[in-house]
Length: 258
Image (cartoon, rainbow, N blue to C red; front, side, top):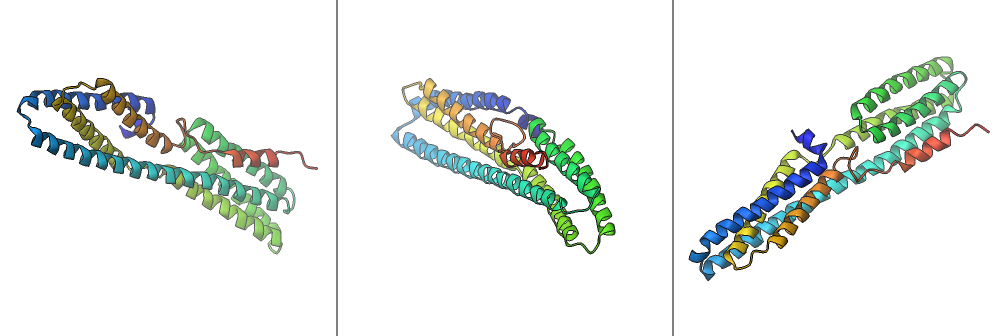
């Protein structure tokens, strides 16, 4: 269920806005019913309760968006590190004997294309399968070079670089899979519903309807939650991790040899 919602962020926004506004409307109607029996002391207590729950909501929103931002920063850094690792492996592959040099260079160019394709399609499982298949092919080439020239210093350098490429693949995969826990998002939704219900209740105890203000509050909170979910989904949505480092690497390694 959570995965379905993650894949339909705008559906989350619409449903959240409606639910939040309904929470204010229910609170407003309950407040209207209780208005005749509410004295100043009751209204003061309700105002205190409103401040407390809205403060908790603000704290949760700040905490959750901080988690999402920290994760997207890690993902950005991982793109740069992976591009550097692949670029280093490609340069060191140029020191290897033929025909392994040409085959390894071809596989590394294909590997970069696979990584970039994954960011366009968002098909994570397909990218993992293709990447691991290329890892196996590259490692077989490294074994062949090691048997042919075990004493050459460039061979050891290349194998070290290839190890780093494979390790960064696992680290970047973990960074992509690391998301804000669904339990925190559920808690955020619940506190938002109670907070907006408290706002509606306070409006109901007064004389004004404030329907535009309540609708605006519901939409704004839904937009913040949408932004958090968007930040947490690097493969889709409006906010994406820049792949400029990988694009620059692809352009460089695809240049004709001088």
